[in-house]
Length: 114
Image (cartoon, rainbow, N blue to C red):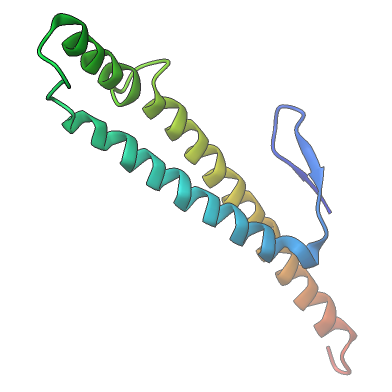
């Protein structure tokens, strides 16, 4: 079965493998979300290893580039990755459910009296 993800992105997957693919993508999303929470915990790194200007500036920049919600930060990249995984999971689930519904109708038509 060929699945269109828009923007010219298509791939083919065996219907029998959809559940495994959905499960793997769901596990990946859980890990991405855990990484996001870990990165967010860097905001608590308010005490630099030293009181000199370089250390204070380094801590500030690490936090800004990691957890601030703006372009180029880990937070934005991580959220985009999580969103892409969600989209794939939703589309694959919809395809699986549609296929199962269509297959059920087809099987009922083949039964006597169906």
